[in-house]
Length: 161
Image (cartoon, rainbow, N blue to C red; front, side, top):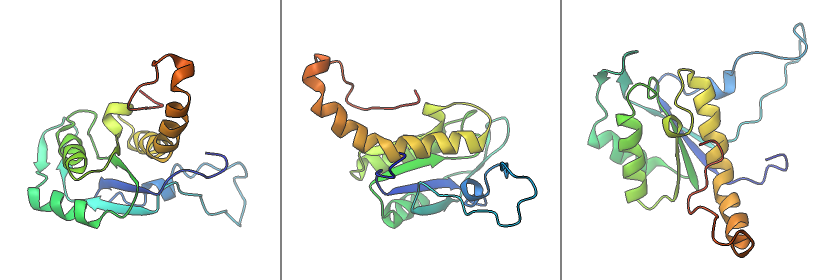
């Protein structure tokens, strides 16, 4: 990750929150710094997903099959990170997207609620992005080291599960 040798990642996030990884927490080491450096993002593509869950997990706006098909068609990346608002309460939309992406042939899909089922959307998003960014290269490293691990290297590698 330090060498920036991860794969091209697409972020699927609830519509209206597409800038969340860019905005972040606005914490910086020098509070009154005038020239604020641009954040280095791990993803190359962001797609806003037209869906919405209430804070208690009830579906306010369902994720339609047409929306899922459109999203699958739009993706231009090697790995996908999915992070939807309130998915820690109800993972139905993240699971629908992950299932559709796996069916479309994407091997590396990181759903935030499976990696980090907590309330904070930014933390879940960052976790899913890091996992999606590193999973393919860790799979390559892990598969090359499989004999040394006597077959204990998992098929799907998640750093944060």
